[in-house]
Length: 427
Image 1 (tube, rainbow, N blue to C red):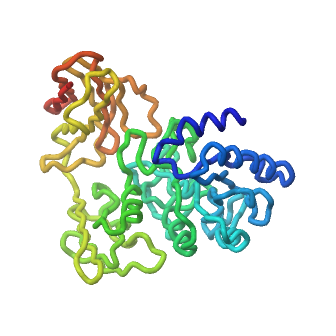
Image 2: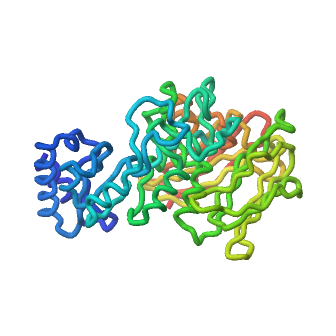
Image 3: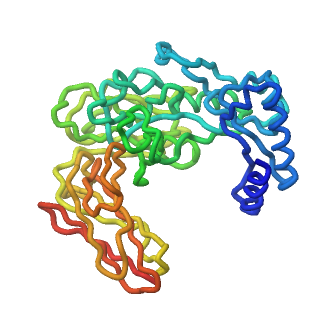
């Protein structure tokens, strides 16, 4: 382990993005009161020798504040323990370890050590998918009877449902705010990834990401944006408003914002003006009954109008819209352009229920590296040039051949639509 740790630090210590070093994550040594602390001190000493400018840590998920292992750490890094594990009425019927929030225990036992949450949340959701009814709580486990569609393998995107050991952003934020000495959090996870397909083992990828595997933002992205950039005017409505067949049924509307107050309108009629309470991180109108049309929210902060958002019922898709994340790439065989395809209606609105098959082709000195759509249940190969849109979107990744220059043109076709295309210059 010594050469591994030394080489690891020497490789990365000149990167300014490094704020601390971790030499362990959820290791069994945290529970071994004789040998664990000895090894931890040895590893901490190696880190100090190689980089005396930064602190070190090892993330724990079961150690108690009074145990010997945490005392050896320069930074207390807690995985899920800080926010609590399987706490709250929605989690009371689950088996497994139950841990109340432990921030106060660690702070009182080791008051001079900084504390951070090295893993929080473990919220699961599927982009653009909403399942009813919506739980009347700030956090709940995702399972066959709560927040999921077991037949399709989807989890509701309201951002309230978690792995059994997890907690929603709302519950996590409240725990952090109640304990302001905690430095902050690292969320599990930033992006969906292959493997760990909780709660449905038949899926190809996880559901944990703030963005999906194609890099498309989930609704939860805007909750974190509002939280982490509190001075940025953010208001984000969910769900989408294409619910043919649910006319007259309760369809809760939530808004993510750091505003003080918010008023929601459905087709011009107020659904109520709300004041956001302490330890609340969304506005909830849980009794809205669906009718086609337009949702509009106006938020207020410090007595004045702040951010707003609009979501409307779309018509059927009529166009393929392609948008590249950059207009030029290097002709080095490595630089990539990520191109988003959206199925839009006649007014340019993304149709959130569109699932049309789309085929990609590339003209010019390059190739399509991969396609995706963010669907965690899809096993279509990344190399496939035909991809079904998921919640109205798909992705194509393009690169130029090494040493060649000119113009690339990505073309998308789908039955019943005019072809869509986007140019990309190769430098």
